[in-house]
Length: 281
Image 1 (cartoon, rainbow, N blue to C red):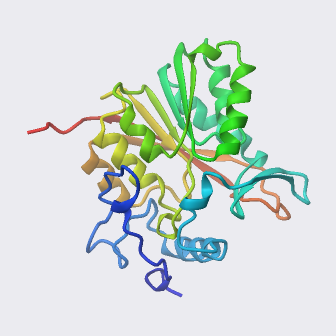
Image 2: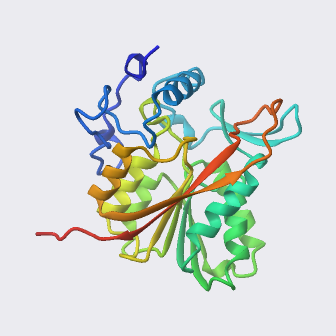
């Protein structure tokens, strides 16, 4: 099966709430018109095909907010949360979340995290509050149950007055911010089939469009659904957005062949910085 033959049932991203998406389309660059972070078509074909089997419908968005959250211990002993039948996070990812938290906290200041999940990254961000001089910690969480977990977690934090948690989609919440962040971590979930392996791309478009990252020194990081780094098309795309410096660190994991949760032998932790906003002219 070729990547272009996978039936993604195209979604009109422009109809999503408060979105300002160009949808990351690079016409003529990819056979299906969609931009991905990697150019590895074999990886994408296998990954997307496997993930499509988990989607009962084209979009999970209408049910995600109020959906029940299943908190399970997998047969191999991993703590897992599932929403709408999707594995959202497991504690196997602790080293990876630690690295993403370190990257987004590089400059201290105002930090934004998209997706609370098990709270792994947010725990690490709070641990860095003093050493990195983090002044504000903002969290956006769509699912109501996980949002409540985040609120309960906040009450246990020593500097809770500087932790702000929002219940809603990032598409709805981002336009409400008017001051840029020093560091941003995106660990959302692809709620449409079309966004599998590429859901960070429309997020990047919006946060740059809204100028919500400090120019030049601000840092963006995110979960990378790839094993070989950024492809040429994605690098070109970053430059088109005004992101002029990007690097990737490899987070080596203890690969367990019998693990029944999402894993790679290596997770990739990106750093995007040296952002130059285009003039409004």
